[in-house]
Image: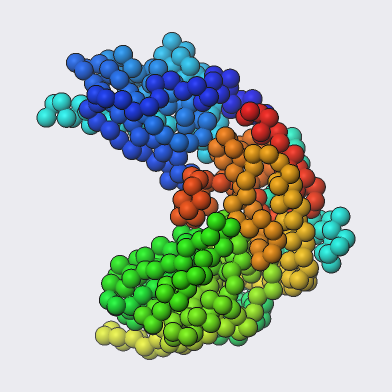
Length: 147
Length: 408
């Protein structure tokens, strides 16, 4: 059932999410919702010296949104903000590819499992929920530190 | 199959070309008619013939096609009016139920003020909630609502408090799009009449499925839409018993009597509420859908759906880890059945069922407060109609078991 969509990696992250739970300290907390399905995520970011020190989150939603958020935290925590934003761009591009893009495993690691999601336009928003929340929170954290 | 009712479902299915297609290698099982129904050949044919042979703008010219188009359009109005026990001049063609309700809510703006109240219920589709919130905001009136019982019914214990002497309008759904609950319209209307409040009923989930007589219901306004009752998208209906009491909603062509540079006077209903070129061929299609349903017999349709709904409710009851939101029996109930599967998000349920060719709706169904009331973010909803058979219900039940296995 759903071979191309529900990859084993996605199911694994869904059942055992990484970095889940809200933690202190943090710079910014954001709350994002997907109004079409009611999925939501509350996400916190801590940036220290231009490095994503921690990303923590709570949320409820489908397997795609929860697993994608889990994979995202693996990819960005410990990365310089610039490198993390590059991964965000790569994941966004993959999601908008409608299945036409071969993802780069060196950049996206477990994130390549979501390549199949891009063939399901109704689910792309699910996969992007956590990523968009992270980008929003990180942008706010950077504005806060430069102000 | 379906022999117990007067509806020959296998004959009906032949009228719906889409039912012959496959989805992901499986025969299509379409259980999303509460969102929008499929269309029979007869409706498509009526629109095609009208557009190919009689089409022109209506209420305009003296030429032959214009007259034929006007006759078809007004004939459609008469058919639709007759379908719900109303008169042609009580029927306004709108875009959909949302527009029908917004029409009334805007037209009532000057009739309400601080101290007045508007009553609704907690089970409304957003289309019968948000316009009243906006009207309350515009006028300073207060919005009140009936809440829901654990069984998915309206809690009528404080009806006389929620609908009181200050209530100017009581708006409620005939049948809930999420819970399937059919409301006791006479009881609600009787209370509104006691206090002199107008009543507006959202019939989107009732008119397609059962005989509705607006005079017998004794309501003031009744709204429904074409695309949920085998008709085209883009055409909805507002029925009103005294539409001439309302000021216009939108201004423009066709809704006027006399126009000068300074001011205008307005046509009588229904033209008063149909500014601009109306939905012409869609209205013709909707009339064909009414004729189709009349041909099947609305009592037969109702009986057919009760049998399918009973089969689905019984089947779900026999499964572990699946819970129905809303009435658990077919008593005072429509055919929309919302359920949750323990541990599986509705999006994943819907996606997994789609892999089996089964189309259901997932999400909050534009009734987010209902989800909140029952402590869920979303549900999966299966809704059957004239073309569904027992095999469709059995496919869904088997699909639910496969979903549980996959997500275990």
